[in-house]
Length: 220
Image (cartoon, rainbow, N blue to C red):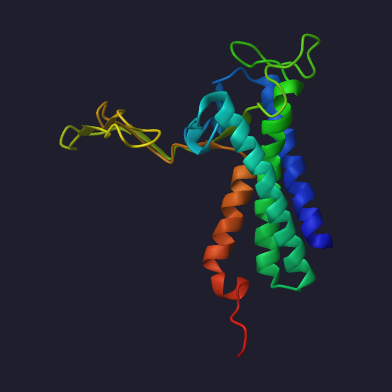
């Protein structure tokens, strides 16, 4: 329990300190190269909804997602407590602790950042502005900043382009135009993410790679 608690606290501190620093020192979409390297960048974005910056159902969808995350974090917390009580393998406890810390880190953004900070559009945000924050409780945006475009290039003319329209009946993407390589620009590892996302991905990765150790078969 002690090790899991230390891990969770450490991740939350690193995650929130990095987010607060970016929020109070960068303008939205501002970017810097780390050590002058093209493939290691700090790029300030805010995730307004689901993963990859997708949105779901406007304001009501945003509220639903935040409340769903709150319910999910309770379930993950119970899973962690149960694993510790049953003296599960250290890999399982570590993985759950990473997922719990990452989920909680992003929940803090979604619940509180809207009332704690002013807007970052064309200005550096202020912490606890006198006029109030940019959004009500539960409507905050998740701060992302880690960007590693390891390949960022223009494709040669012989690479084919793919273009089609999604069927109208599909949810979220119905009727939208999908174009692949239409502008000849290609970036490998395009997502912008944060420390909390890294913790979640690492936890899930541990469960996948060390599945047999995390979930050993019980003897008959």
